[in-house]
Amino acid sequence: MELSTYKLILGSKSPRRSELLTKAGFRYEQRVIETDESFPPKLELNLVAEHIAVAKANAHEGQISKGELLVTADTIVVYNNKVYGKPISADAAVQTLLLLSDQVHIVYSGVCLRSIDKSLSFTEKSEVKFGKITEQEAITYVSDFNPLDKAGSYGIQDWIGFARIEWIHGSYTNILGLPLAQTYDAILNF
Image (cartoon, rainbow, N blue to C red):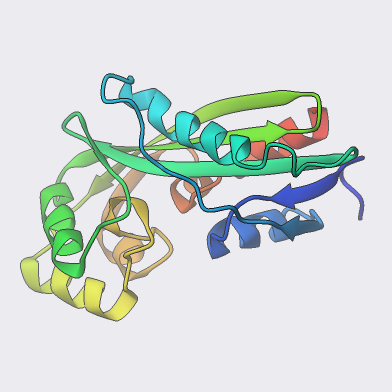
């Protein structure tokens, strides 16, 4: 099924983003260019993920051909006015989970769509409430599920999402890393 008049290019190596686009019925090619994911220290936290998604798209400058549509994205967790991206170590992941235990945090995903002559970016927000996570649960989760490639040190699709998330407000797929309904519509309307 052809859903877009463009040849879709996914500028991400995330297996979750890839799976979501596939499940939405899109055919695409993956092209990943490693990108600096830093952001200006004074940038409003709700704009960080979109800033990084745009930077990932900018890295493909000159690599997009006529008829191609590049999709890039980034996801961050924000708690207590601090950004939690991918943890730098297993110990850092455990500490992040313990910090998020029994608290509400925000997940922002930024998405950028870019063709050779047009660009569109947006941010989606979801709220997540964790129940109590014990230190042993955090250690076991990090050991068994290795969430070092996930913002906030967890994957909602893993054990911790099923056993310790009390509620979410907003898009589930946003928490996975790509707000699919919004991205789907943006691609179709691009």
